Image (cartoon, rainbow, N blue to C red; front, side):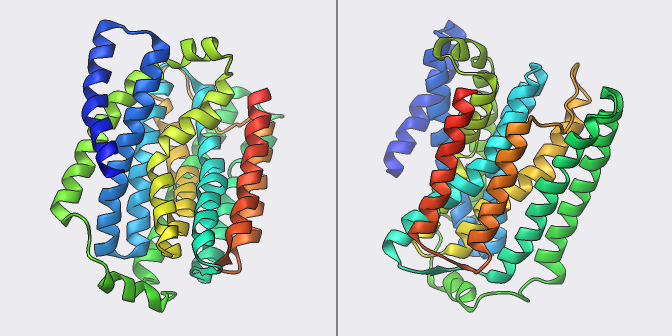
Amino acid sequence: MNKIFALLVFAGVPLSVIGSLLHWPSVVMFAVYCVTIIALAAFMGRSTESLAVVSGPRIGGLLNATFGNAVELIISIFALKAGLIGVVLASLTGSVLGNLLLVAGLSFFVGGLKFKRQKFNVFDARHNSGLLMFAIIVAFVIPEVFAQDIDEAKTMTLSIGISVILIALYLFALFFKLVTHRGVYQHESEGEQAHEEEPEWSKGKALLILAASTVAVAYVSERLVHTFEEVGEAFGWSELFIGVIIVAIVGNAAEHASAIIMAYKNKMDVAVEIAVGSTLQVAMFVAPVLVLISLLFEKSMSLVFTLPELVAMVSAVLLTIIISNDGETNWFEGLTLLAAYLIMGIGFYLL
């Protein structure tokens, strides 16, 4: 599998450059760009997995989420520049749904097929539950509610204020987890796993590959954004469907692969940290950063989602909290999350 991804990277990056210069059909280039980004994301996943062995599950999960979300952040910035506000908001929705339902669901399902019961840090789960409730249900719903009675300029001001608060709280959450309360809620197994496993790559090599992959992803993502309109017309996909499903899956490919691998190895603390931690990072850092970055472009983006997007995200958060708050999981709970994702995917496709 690793050789296949390596082949896809070494073939995909040159093809992306050549196809772009020769103006190959958008549908063909869309497929080339997506496959290339997924292959690059796999290398990013392997790099962060090596760093996770050295750094521990919390920092490893954070690194994985950060570099996984870097792909989507890059795609979204280029989409903002192109004025595709709807695609960006939809991709943020898709990230929340993809991480909580698809990534966590596949992780719980695949891991559960091998192990009847899998445990993870219940204190982390409860801590993350509170942040999920705040980020999605408070910070995302409030702008939609108030936007009904205030004008566009005031809605943008509200979005900027909320964005600043979200970023500040996210940084404080990291400080709480990694500094003031580091190790307070640690599983005994976390320390044991760090000593048992050897990283695939050295720290230096992992960081180098991570940096190179991120640069390559930035280039390919910029080209990918320019294919959205023609691909949507060719397949009959709406802007909402492209953002919620396509961009979100491609942009989060690194987390998808890494979380499932970790769950299969029974490293559920890392798998859950990737899925839920990535969602929190999208909601509390990526989304507000995009709001602030959008001020530099012709069209500004407020934190006002459509009603279907909000209902889907709130439902995903509540279902995830109910399933994960006991610190245990199994394959059937994973299947439940996947079923919810499929139902929402059908709904967004029909929209």
